Image 1 (cartoon, rainbow, N blue to C red):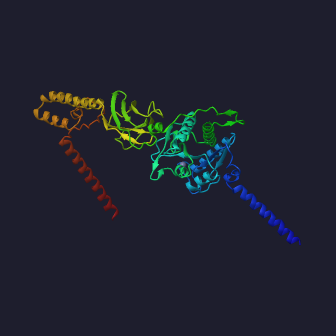
Image 2 (tube, helix red, strand yellow):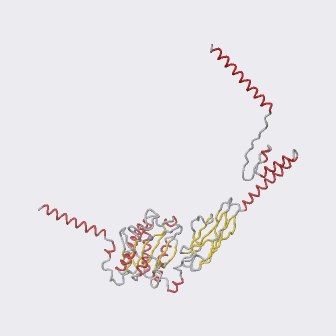
Length: 464
Ligand SMILES: [Zn+2]
């Protein structure tokens, strides 16, 4: 009887634990779904933390992208939930694999008005930086998402991140990016929010703490609240008067959100060069007929390696045509020729390289000329001196001079210095007279004979 009761209690407890575990493990989406579908006048927003499970996303930092997107998405979820008239969902709350199709299907299942896929960026060459938003490429979804993009970009700008723009990319079957394409299949507009680049120090500083990654989420939520004109009593804000940028298909066609061509022109020239300091001022004249130029960089080794990219001065996100120039100074080594090359980038990271410019300092020529001058002067001087003893000797000296041997030392003159280098002291030798040598040999022989005699004498005495 007691065993039976114990068993019952045990099984009830086990059931309870399993139920609790299931509840905890179930994604937030499932719990939040009930009753939202048919609510009139309520905006349904789906937040999608990018990547998950086997798919780590960017791995350039020890905190993989999939963890970062979750932090930002959770913060966005919490912030947007503070507004009235909006129902918010997350596609995943756990570190699990989820296909882009599944994410779009989930959005469709809750009648989403919009999908926001949360991401952090990285580039192949780990050079570019800034925030960008990818929107649907086709009507009718592109126009409203362009309007949202303008609000989101302003939020990123307020945080100090460089703004790379509102873009779309066409693939083989509609939009190139899966979440946008799969959502569009259900008629749902989706955007990809690339907050900043994790693989550049310049951008990582915007996402190096959990607090900062959460701040991105709050900014994302604010952009959505502005877009839908939401109010929040808790936050004490009212965005109902927000004006969206007027946009029509004509304007969208004008705005190059599908640019895939390189800038047409990148001309490099030298404005000035300082022989004293080695500072050279360059000018790049460049042009992209489709959009604003975004960055430039340069190489001192003919294009083998490049310095980090710099922002194109006066870069304006919504400026459509750009013919402009940039002037900048670089201090170059004066002792060797530099092969200088510059590149310009447009908003799609398409780049055009300039012609190579070889920078040669007159300083080097002066150095060479001074050395030659020195040699000539001394050559002339020695010839004058040598003329008196013998013509033959003068010829020898001339020969040595042309081989770069220091003449002052050979003839025992004062210490001389070549421009740009010191001269080693040559050893001065005087001949040893033959008589001295002979005398030394004789003394040596005499000593040997005496030593041999003494030893013979000692041997005889002890041998007896
Ligand atoms: Zn990503």
